[in-house]
Each structure stands twice: as structure tokens, then as C-alpha cells.
Length: 557
Image (cartoon, rainbow, N blue to C red; front, side, top):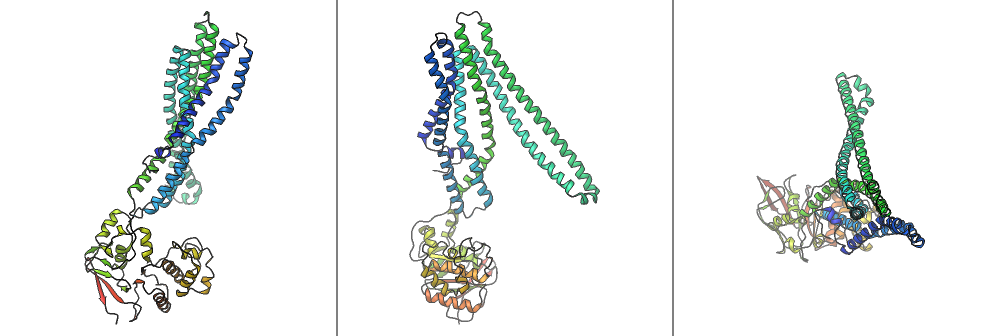
């Protein structure tokens, strides 16, 4: 299902056969509802005068089972309308999937969840429960007036015009009343806040006469506004009730004036039967029109929610994420072109080449651009605009990001930051996060080379807190390293990822990693100074000169 801009269209999308059946059921329900007045007319004009008791019994039995038939049709109608809920669920799933992929969108998570869960559920409920009733009420009103016009054209026209003008005014007045109620609730909330301030901070108010005068004046003003709003609501309610009662009196008098004007008619029985049928149909139409107006107002009350959902949907559709195609088996050489602009605004002066098996120690002063260089070259593009910029900067074995799928990239290159994000799941699940396999032997081997303590190994089945409570900073960083090594990437980037470990443990872990994964290419960013060692094959010091980032290769010894 395509994600359209109008949420109402999304809910009502597809299922044309069901819509056809819903239409047929709606017409059937309306005809069944209006059938009793017509049967009453037939009984009064034909069956009773001719004393046809068998036919009267059949009509009576049919009138008895009409509610049962109607309830059955309502159940079928709700079953057929269930596609609205299915469309809503598909919309939520697709929108939330898009939201997770749109890394450049800075949307409030709580607001997104509120729109996709609460507001979509609210609107879906109104459509699911209301669309069948809306169609049924509309059809009943239209067919009712058609029958009235057929039974008595002149009185039917009078009833049609009176009810048309009446319910236009009823709709307008009901909407004004709804607006007044919202205003009253807002004023009541403000008045309650002032009251809490006035009576909850008595001592502070007494010690500040100016503030006390301000609170007193504001409280009285809010109370006056509240009283005016209440009086306005009362007036609008009285006028609305008066309008409906006057219109009903006019229509009732119009119907039964026929008995006076045709009092000497020879076909008086048929006339009475018609008038009774018209009156019964009218008694169905009046509540139907009242409920229809209420439903229209309910739909309009949901308009702001629908607009917010549409706005979110359009935002997600515009911010489509980038997804490359293809599978790359060899990542190297990686070439970062000279004069490439980094995400921090500086430019790389020299060309940088990273070959397979390189173990590069990168150092430099704080803020020089070490992380910016790595993130510019090695973070997967978030959208098409980002990709077009990256295509000018970096190549991987003469390929670009468009030749590498996101899933493929997640196994080729892993960047471990200084701060590791934990999730509310077991320690083992936090380590195997995103990995296809959970081979226990592989996990044990990685825990061994990372020098996991016996106590930490015993806690693999323990659910840990996302804030890392009960874990040291070094233990959390070990979890991040284990999570990266589980994927067995070709390129591992450690961005201050061992800063919480002591130097000796860090050296032992690096030696173990190099022995276990001899083909691994490593970029290690650190502020620490390391003596000449065989852990690294290249040493680079970054420095800044004006707006340029300088890449200085230094000898290891």
C-alpha cells in the first residue's frame, strides 16, 4: 500500500469488492428501516378494511424480526469495514520503518509515537465505527424523503425545505457550541492554575503586596470570563433546542393539516394511511439527521489530528533514506581524495590511502577532526544528498556506496565509538546485537581474547539496564568491542573505544585481536601516547592549518 498524503484516503484505500458490499448492505439497512411505515400504510389502507388477517400476521412477524435482521447486517458491515484497521496498521508499520531509516530527521520521538499510535488509532476508530453509520444515515435520509415525496408531493416539499434549513442552522449552531465548550475548558484550566497559585502560595503572596494584587485581579478576571462563557453556552444550547422543537412542531402540523383539508374526501382511509406513513418516516429522519450532524462535527474535530499525521507522512516521504545495491567482497584499497570537505567544514589536504591489513594509529589534538574524517569517509550515507557528497570524497576498491548495500556495509566496516549504547536485554543479546549467528563457541572465544572477567561471564543471561548501572566504564567498552568482533568485519575503527581500559589490558587485548584476526584492518584513534610497538603498521598525527586538515605519516621507530 502506498503512503499517500491524506490519511483518510489511506484508510479507505483498496478493497473495492468490500466497498461494494458495504454499499449494498447500507441500502438494505435503510430500506428495512423505512419498511415498517410502508407496511403500516398497506395495513391501514388495504388489509384492515378487508379483514385480511393472514397478511396482517405475516406483516407483524416481519416487523418483529426486523431488529434481528438489522443487527446481523450491522455485524456484517463491521466485518467488511475491518480493512480500515488493516490499512491503518500497514500505514503505521510503513511510517515507523521510514522513521527509523531517516537518520537526518531530527523529530521528537515521543511526538512521532503519539501521532503514529494515539492519533492514528483515534482517527481509525472514528472511521471504522462511523463510516458505516454515516453512509447508512445519509442513505436513510435520502430514501426517506423520496418516499415522503412519493406519498404526498406538496407536504414532502415543505418537510424537505424545513428540515434542510433547520439542520443547516443546527450544524452551524452545534459547531459554535463546540467552539464555546473548548474555549470554556481552556478558561477553566487557566482559572484552576490561578486558584492553585492563589491558595497554594498564601505566605508568599502575603509577603508581596503587588503580586497579591495581580493574583487577585487575574483571578477575578478569569472567573468573570468563565461565567460569561458558561452563560453563552447556556444560551446557545437553549437556542439549539428551541430551533429543533420549533421545526418539529412545524413539520408535525404540516403533516396532519392534511386531515383537515381533506376531511370530506371520499378516499379518506388512504389519505390517513399516507399521513401516518409520512409521520413515521419523519420520526425516523429527525434523529437520523441529528446523529448525522454529530458525526460530521466528530469528523471535523479529528481534522487537526489528520493534518498532523499527513504532515508527518509527507516529511517521512521526502526524507527517503539512501540504499545502495550490490555486494562488495573486498573493501580495499580505500582512497579518500585530496581536498575533500569533511562534515566539520574543514578540507583534507592530502590523499589518504588505507590498504588491507593496515593497523593505523591516529592521534592529534582535541577537536582537530579525527572523528570527522572517519565519519565523513566511513559512515554509510543517510540520504541521496549525503551520498552524492560522499561519492566525491571516497572510493572502496574503485567502488562507491551505491555499489554496496547497507546490510553488506554493516559486515564490512564497524565503527566503535567511545560511548557504547546498551539496551534493556541480556548481556549476551547486547553482545550479539545485529549478528546473524549466536554460536556459543565463537562468543566464548571473543570473550576470552577480550579478557572478560569470570564475574562478567556469569552475567551473560542477566538483563542489564540501558544506563549501564552495575557495569564499569571499561566493562561497557568491552561489550562494544565484543559486539564489533562478532561481525568479523574487514575494517574495524576504534574511536577512543578503549579509553576506560588501563594501558596494560589494552595492549593485551590488541595483541589477542591481531593474533585471532590477522587479516583485520584497524584504525585506532586515541589521545594516548604509545611507545614504539609492533601493534601498528602506520602512525599518523593529524593537525589543522587554517581550514585544512593535515595527515602526517610518522615513522614508528
